[in-house]
Length: 523
Image 1 (cartoon, rainbow, N blue to C red):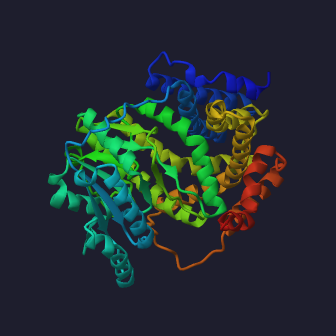
Image 2 (image 1 turned 120 degrees about the vertical axis):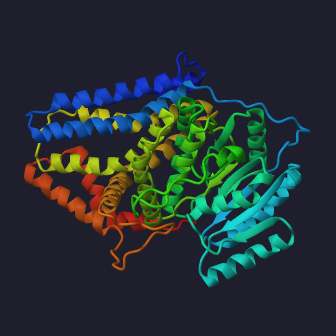
Image 3 (image 1 turned 180 degrees about the horizontal axis):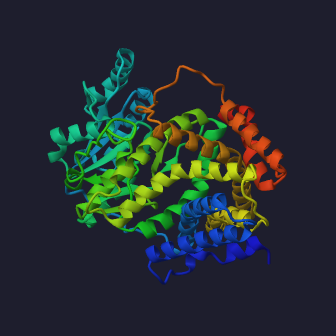
């Protein structure tokens, strides 16, 4: 029997987890991290101060990457939740506000979506129990004119209530807080959506039903799929999401339990719970680490949990999606803002009364960016020959840990594919996703390192598109320069041929070709 046949005939999902998912996650995380750390310690040829420093950094990053592996493994043993559907004649007891936040995005796609969405709400018999609000922070006369023209037919038809603030204090959190002050008392729940968010009427109906069945539930975060991409990079992200998110999301929901997280949109929130989260604190000092909190969603979830409300993630809810950055440049600009927002959370870790898992969510967000400079330091020290290691055990264990979510995704998906043709599609898509992910991973880690350094130097990225430098550097040139530097160090120390190091410097050196190729629009 082949490996694939064995996997497809013995799905892990049928096995029951006999211990607490949270306990299993912690145990798996520590076991995998300690295995990676032990392999590194045993492979060091000569111990010195540099080796000691690198071993500490290795342990820190091992704990970080092991969290993803542990979540994916846990997802295989957690049965998919099958929620009881709302009765046919059920009607919500309270009203739900559907909030669409705008800040300079193209209004035409939003207006087109809302036109169809309004009809879908009517078919779902939710028209009288829901109300759509478009909350705008758009600036610039031309953008405002286009936005108002696109939305005017919907306003005239009574489908939406449109409000644009004259002063956009505190950005999106302030926009929603203003709505809370003027309209919040009329509603039991609110569904928060960004301009590029898409949710079906049936998904919203199911979320309202779940909220009404659980009076202690303050926030329910739907899983989020991706809208079909328009570039090679956009399609890569959608394929990765389609392959990995189902199993990974199930594992995350299992160990986070009633202390889940909030991703800023595609979620339903109990208005009474949100009242206990706003207004958010303004951090002392100026940007980038002070002032208004950019990554407000994690904080709002933590504050609601502190007030005693449950926060849950529901990866099983269908009909929830968003658009993704279509070019690496757009992706890096968004990531730069997220990096700054997550590093601000360093100043919130000591807030009194927070659930330990809320603090853990803060830490994971921080390390998703701090891991970049740590990996860069490791690569620099090893390529320059500052420390010497022998054997491939550490590299193989790190590779296995990083590949674990992808392997677990295959174990989850292949049994559900009823024909060999479909299994072939899954395997080909997985292989393509692996190749592209391996190529862009060094670029992303380098950009994370650059973002962290810029923030520590006091550079503020601003909001949304960020503040752009007047100096234009061709795409991929910085990455190419760093790749050449690593290759030069490796040549000097005699390890340029190491396969693991080639997977770092070759993608970086090819960035001037790789980035435009991935950014290309596909038909």
